[in-house]
Structures are given as C-alpha cells and as structure tokens.
Length: 98
Image 1 (cartoon, helix red, strand yellow):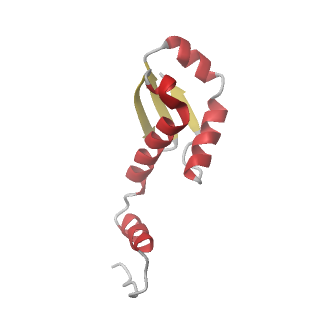
Image 2: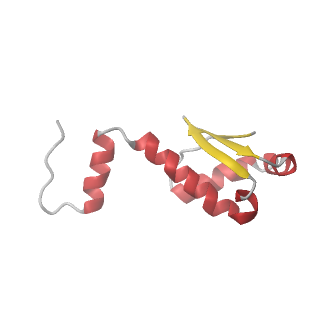
C-alpha cells in the first residue's frame, strides 16, 4: 500500500509517486527517449527516421537511408551521451541503427 502524502505535496511529487507505485517508468522512458531523439536530431534526420524503440537500455532506431545510418554509426557514443544528458539520467547504454 502506498504511503499517504501530506497536504503540502506538490503535483510533481504526487506524479512521481504514482509512476513509482504503478511501475510506469519503462513506458515513461520510452516516450522520453523518443522525444529526446526528435529534439536532438532535427528535421533532417527525423525525416529519415521510421521508428525509435527503447528495449531495456538499448535504443533501436530504424532509418530509411543507408547513407545516414552509416554516418550516424560513427557517432553512436555521442548519441548515447546526448540523449542521456537531455534526459538528465542514464537511460540509454547502446544504440542499434537499422
């Protein structure tokens, strides 16, 4: 049973507790990573991005351009770092470009 919050709790604190109690964090991470990818990569890369999926700590990105896939594969560690900095916590440990 979840502990009862006092009347001075902020909405953010209440939402964090709801996410924790209901084990919603993996789903929230999935949404956050998709948004971070979209924000960080810009319109050029996003126009060739078909799908972005987070499974565990691995980010799977499906691209429609083999040239872009090859170019991004050289900067995988930078992509991981940028996404984790955007989210302010370590969510992604590896990137797989398809």
